[in-house]
Image (cartoon, rainbow, N blue to C red; front, side, top):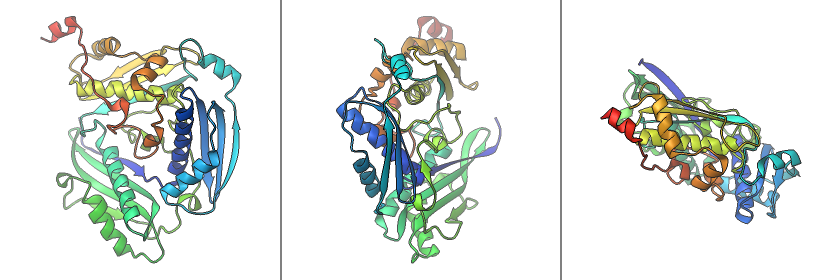
Length: 372
C-alpha cells in the first residue's frame, strides 16, 4: 500500500464524442424496441453541422436514422441545422453465421474486464465516481442557466494514503458558455451548484485546488469546437483508468457483441464478489472467440484483499455465474432498449442497470468449512 494521487475525467452529454454515443445507443434502442434480435453496429461521427451515421444493421425494424439523430441533438441542447449522411449495410454473412446458431455465440474475438471496489457506495473507484457526479451536476446547471452551453468536462484528482481514499486534491470543471457570460459568473455557479452540492465536505479541505474554465473562454463547443466519434471515451465509460479495459468500445453494439455484454457481465461478477464481502477489490478478465458460446479464459484478481484465494474465488464464481453469451444476455435481460441510459456518465455504477444488481452468492461447503 502506498500514497499517491489518481485522476479520472468525465464529460457531459454535450461533448462531441458523447453526442455520437447517445445517437448510436438511441438508434440501437429503437431497433430493439421493434425487433429484440436486431444485430446492430451502427456508429456516428459528427463535425460542425454534418452527422455521419454508418455501420452494419441486420434487423426487421424500420428506423428513421435522421429523425433520431436530430431529436437527440435537440434533446442535448443543440438546435443548428444538421445534415445527416447515411452509409449502412447488413451484417456480413460470415459474422451472421458465426453468431446465429441454436445458442447465441460471440460476434467477435476479444477481451473484456470488470472491476469493483469498496471506495464508494456504487462500488466504483472514487476518482471516476466523483468525476461523473460533477459532470451530471454540471449538465443540470447548464440546463438551468441560459448563459451556459451543453458541452463540458470534469476531472477529479483523489489523494490516497496507504491505499485508501483520504481527500480530493484537485477538481477541474470546464463548461461551454455564451460570449456575454463572465468568468466570475461561471465560477460562482460551478462552485455552488456543481462542486459544493456534489462532493462530500469531508473530502474537500483548505488545500483542495479548483480550476474552473482554466482556458478562460469556452464559447465554441460541441461538434463546432471538435469532431466527435462513437467509442472515443472508453476510459470515461468504464473505470476512469483505475481498472483495465478491453479492446473494444461499448456504445452502439447489440447484446450479441461480447465487447459490450462481456464487459457488463464481468462488472456484474466483480461487483458481486465485493458486495458479498469476498474481497475489497476485484478485477475480472474474460475472453471470447468468434462463433464460440463459452469464454476462452477467465482470470480473477483480488489484489490480495480476498477472503479466499483467487483460485477459490474463481470456484465460487463458477458455481454462481455463467459467462456463456446467451446466459449473460438472459440473466441481465439485455434485449431491452436500455442502452441510451449508458451513453453518458458511465456504463457502470447506475443502480437502474441490471448488471449493477447484487445477489447472494452460494459458497461451496468445503470452502465454508475451511474458512470456519
